[in-house]
Image 1 (cartoon, rainbow over the protein chains, first blue to last red):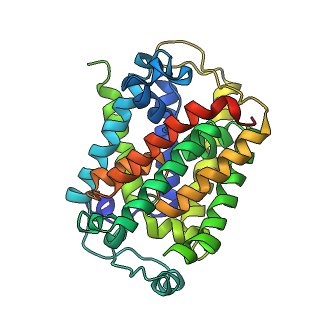
Image 2: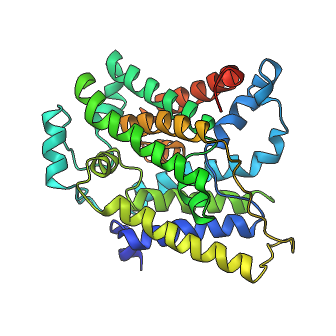
Amino acid sequence: MIEFIKQPWPWYFSGFMIIAVMLVLIFFGKSFGFSSNLRTMCSMAGAGKRVKFFDFEWKNQIWNLMFLVGSILGGFIATNYLSTPSPLKLSPETIKDLDQLGVRFDGGLNPSSLFSLAAMKDIKTIAILLIGGLLVGFGSRYAGGCTSGHAISGLSNLQIPSLVAVIGFFIGGLIMTFFIIPLIF
Amino acid sequence: MKYIKYIIAGTIFGIIMNKSEAVSWYRIQEMFRFQSFHMYGIIGTAVVLGIIAVRLIKKFNVKDATGSAIVFHEKDKAYTKYILGGIIFGLGWALTGACPGPMFVNLGSGYAGMAIVIIGALLGTYLYGTVKNKLPH
């Protein structure tokens, strides 16, 4: 079984496992939504004293922060103990498109030219990551959820608002991919 | 100790997100360029199974671990925030290749640059809190 786990997982097994996690959280009496942790972290840092939005009982959200801590651990375990050295099987068209943008495919999960410690010497890279993160944080709170809260939990419960949010995710993603990334990369 | 089960669930989530490659910047680019079925397959499988599971839970009034009824919250119906917030989120998702969960999974996977993305996401969340009342919802 460990050999199976070490391979990249097929999409149907991955989708099944994501729902298994959602159901485990539901069974614990909670719900699957990751981005609310960002609000909780702002509250923990004392943002509730200045901004009303962060003035709430964040201690009720400690379980979700523990889930977050686990997710970091999971990334570490998967990378260091459950991986094979074979490169990610990215589509050749994507490799070619990204190459034209100056992002060489290096076989990892993420391009080290953008995310490695060495890449942090470049002020432009830092600006891209900071602004990108800012958009994700702002947008997920504005929309009241992210991929887990809307695309997984919300769509599972047939919520039209979640469908609208997911359509928004795609409009934004397509604008960034086809119009903005070619200008800034 | 009551939190240990959430750490374990989170750890499994992190492993899933890493092994499914859903945390991959490359995979997100591939998805937005419609050049592979991989990400659509993951999200599609999850949503179909999720719909069935939620239906069954409601139909059989399944209780949670504490014996309480499982309640699914209805999202409030004010569409401006979902579409505008969604678009802003999507812009950032395509740029960083990471939604909030994967940012942390990738940090654990050894991508130091994700710390910058996380700082950005916290700033963005804070910024939303400060301007919330001025925005159309």
